[in-house]
Length: 530
Image 1 (tube, one colour):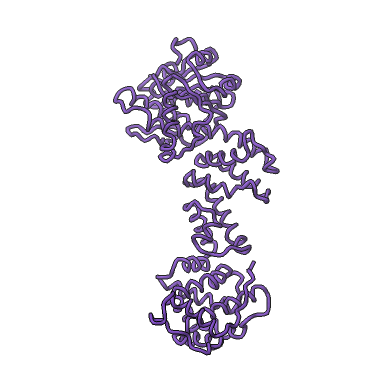
Image 2 (cartoon, rainbow, N blue to C red):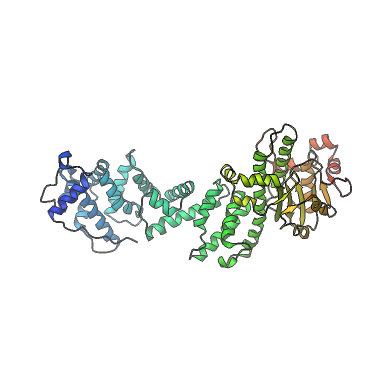
């Protein structure tokens, strides 16, 4: 939509003289170099002709501004389908090579004129280049050609040139700029580019840019910081929007993308939970599919384990003392067991985390510092229970199989596996604390325990697949990086992690059966179960 603008009005000479002084002198007095305008003022055809003949030195500052206003007024009347103002002058001169060159040179020589030209005329021309008609189209193309050869154009003109070159390419770059600046397209358009906003701009630039940002953030290859993703979702998935069809579509797409992209899971779930509440009020998203609802419920389990991964990394780096003996081993155990369960995080239905009470207090006390150092929020401690045991104890529910894992502590603290475990999991889900005698109540229900001996991962990978039908869904397995303090895992071929006849298995245990006998134990086989 083109805004209505007043048409140029004739001014009395004395008022014109004051305006000329204001526009051209930058506040200087006549004695400081200001050359007062000569009267009578030039006619509009004289100004157009002076530009066409490249004789602009004969013009005063006010003449340059009157020219731009005339060009703008003609452009507006054409776009609005009204009777053209200055039609004959524009038709005769505006596409003239000398005229275009003079306008460009004047804009280079005078900052005030350049700013006025860009704000009043050029941005409307270039931004609407797909609907601009001759002779303004010819002027734009010639002006654009000169600007492209100029290596010293200002930032606004660079943007206008890029829009004319490739609108789709500009929108893609605009979207990336908004993501990096963590800024909504509307604000970036106005604050950083300095452009006006109206219905045409919204439909042709701002809305497409939002869609591009949404696509980029949901891309499987996105490496965007989670805080920027969360900030972007606040305007991309706006629950106050009147466009409910778009809202539902974006919510479904975000849920679907987050299911397979761990970088999206926390920001998507946090944004949706803040608006949908818990349990979710699906009436706020009219027509959302049953598939999306079920995926959202699974996402809650995925995100709970992602919180634990972040929590484990914080504990690993910040709260295990650098002791050359036991503490070093504790760090190694925490890392290797966390990395093992990363292989199943896309299948986890729900988890319950308990951490040592002293560690909990340290994290709570230092949360502001940790938020800056790690990509975490206060939600990291939501729903976490405490224990006096020196370990992270996590109840992991996969389908109806419950696993109780100790992420630190001696090798005698084994993984406990309970079949038909959902009903037992429900008894612990809301607990704020767990004691040793609470844990003993689960031992009689366990079908297997796993000793964390050398190559226990290979044994457990295969037992989960063969005994419980729980398979790794990717073509690789996560493995802890040995010989380094890096908490992040490395990817290895699935065969490496599940090879029953590997050389290491044979050397360590004689064969795979020997590995199972010494790693997978049944209740009663050893007295100290944890």
